[in-house]
Structure formats: C-alpha cells, structure tokens
Image (cartoon, rainbow, N blue to C red; front, side, top):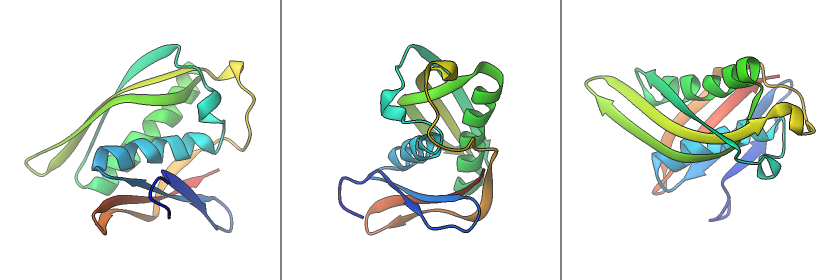
Length: 144
C-alpha cells in the first residue's frame, strides 16, 4: 500500500475482496464504500446529483461496516442509486453500540455503464476493521 492509496482489490476465488485504508475510521469506511461501489461502476464518473442520508448501527466495528455497506446495496435495489462520494460521515460509540450517520451523493444507475458484476451482499467472511501502523484498515469480501 502506498501512502495515498484509498483501497486495493485482493485475489479471491469466487467473490470480490478488498482492503480500504484511512487516516481516520471515517476515512476507512468511506473508502470501503467507494471500493464496493467501484466493483460495479467507475465511481469517479458518477455525478453527485442527489444526496441521501444513511444510518447504520452495530455491536462492533465489523457489524457497523457490514450494515453501512449493505445500505448501498439497498439503495441500488430500491432507488437505482450509484454512489459518487460520501460528503460527511460520523461514527460514534454509545455504550456497547457503534452508530454511523452519513450524507452520500450519487446519481441514478441507469445513467452509467456498469464495469463489473452487481454486488449481492457484504459478508463477514475475512472481514476486519483495525488500526495498523497508525492507519485504519478495513478488509471486506462482497458476494457477487
């Protein structure tokens, strides 16, 4: 990983595996969402025409990340929404539960050519969220 790398795709036999990086936990979650969306579409080409709010919760960082990423699959299935960027993301822990609120921008999927298969689900297989060398790393496998 170089210093400016936001995410990288890793070898996997059947699905898509990636690691997302960030100086902060919020950055790592943002880059994980971009990596997952990047499986299906070139996110840098998606125009930020519409904003939406996303709420997620989990008992630990892995379940929070899984819930967060599943929201993008739901948005694609229900609102035909492709992610362009995450405008704001806040992660907090209250008691034993982690919460996330994000404002995301994107556009209708019909306006863009897909570059890969549709992501069906975000799995817990090989998933982790942790600090490594002063940076946050999130590893995810998505079912395609």
